[in-house]
Each structure stands twice: as C-alpha cells, then as structure tokens.
Length: 332
Image (cartoon, rainbow, N blue to C red; front, side):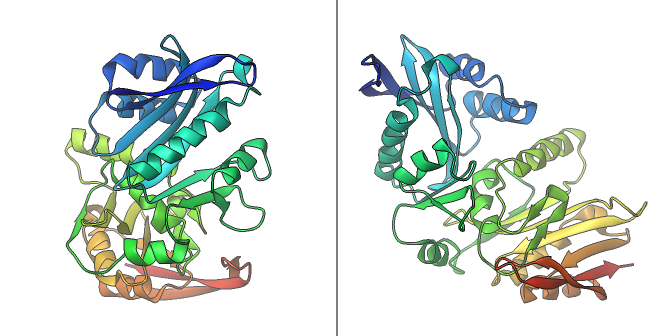
C-alpha cells in the first residue's frame, strides 16, 4: 500500500512527492526493483521478496518520485519495532540536492509515530552519509565505527533490558523472515563473546543485515528439499527478540567434521541448549565449536555433550580491544 507523505523542496527549488510503500505492493514492486537493481543478487532477492510477498515483517520503502518514477529510496525492515535501516540510494543525476536529508526526516518521524523502538545501519565512518545519519539521531557503536544505532527512547542498555526481558513464551525453530531484523539486536550487543557466528563472519559487534539473508535462502531451500535446517533460532514471542542462534556447517579445514556456531543472550542458556539440540544434522557427526567466554554458551555446549579442548591464548581482541583466549570445544 502506498501512502503519500506530501511534497518536499529540493535544493534546486524543484518540488517532488514523498511517499512510503508499505509492502507487499505489487503495483510498486517493479519500480522499487528497478531503482535498486544495481544491488547484489542477495539484495535483489531480498527486495523482490519484501516488495511482493507477505513475510511477517514491516518492510517500508520511503521514496521521492516524479509522477510515480522514484529517484531516491530508504528502507526500514523491522519486526515489532526493531530492525534494519538500509538501501539508501539516490540516482546520480539527483544527488547533492538534499534528497537524502529530506527523505530521512520524513522516515524518522514516521518511525517514531508508528511506535518504532530501534534501528541499526552500517555506513562508512565520517562519510557524508554518516553525518546525515548522525544529524537524525544515529550514533556509532564506538569511536571510528560506521556501524550505527538509534533508539527512540532511552539508551542502548535500557532498551536491551526491556527487549530481552526473560519472562514470557519462547519459540525455537528454523529461521523465518522476522528473524532477519530481530537478530540484529543480539549480534550488535555488548554482551560477552566476540566469537558469535564465525561461519557467517559474525565476530564482535556485527550486523546480521547481509549474513542472515544467506541463512534465509538456505532455510527456504531446506524446506523445498524436505531436509532439516542448518540453523535454529530461539525468540521471545512477546518482544520478538532473538535470544539464541545455533548453526552448523562443514568445517572449512577438516573433512567430515562439522563447525557448530552457538551464540545467545547471557541469560539464555536454556534457549541455547534448545537451539543446538534441534540441529538434526549434528546428531551423529564429529563437531567442533569455538568460544571466548559467555558462561551460558559454554554450559550449553557441555549440556549437549561437547568437551573443552585446546586453548588458543590471547587469540582475538575483545570488545574493548584487549586480547582474550579462544577455547576449542569438540564432540566426537
């Protein structure tokens, strides 16, 4: 469904219409896909899916257009008010006219009005885009970081306390589209553990915006082929928060061995056990996992039969930049 957000004036003096497409919307889908057709295949797949299918997430494309022909875009993809901000693009001939600043102001106000809670994005540090985002309330994860976060109310810590509240029903199962935006808060958190999901290159505070698209595509293929999923997710149903993720893949070094990634909230030991226990493909295979702390994760690995193995001293820097050990866990 398309909703007009009124007209805005560009720096050139031209007035153009702003609007938001609350997807799915078949009428606008082809125009959105054409505008963002320069993206990589995984992103084109994501845009096709969001624009044309009911996915259980709130996918909203904010556009500036002339008579229905869009030339600038921004996307929010959220679940229960939390998720990704991305696909910021203006066609070359319309750049430097203030389009991004105008459109973002409308987007942020709409996000607040719809009871949004938190947004996350990635950009180049100190780039022109970085300063536009800061002007609208985003802050970097750390000095020099282009990974940014925005909270409608309060700070990151108070948001996480409420979002990851331990009461309420928990659901564990294969990845769904709602986990794409909802996983962002867990993996960009300051919780213990730098080793989070190495098979998806998620180490330290890292965005799931790109990596989880690969997870979703594999999950869809698994359903089509009637095989078990290689990833399991636990979520708190009330808030939508992803509290634990387990994933298995072929170990990149050892033939016939599986790499098991496991990460979760510090209070989610039970959910981590449920996730890794639901990975059917690891039942009879030798497995290796890695940990640099997070006592709940290590207790979960032990609970499903993993043993503590070799220690890699001062192997990687933690979130503060200090070297920490990485422990190899294994199950024969």
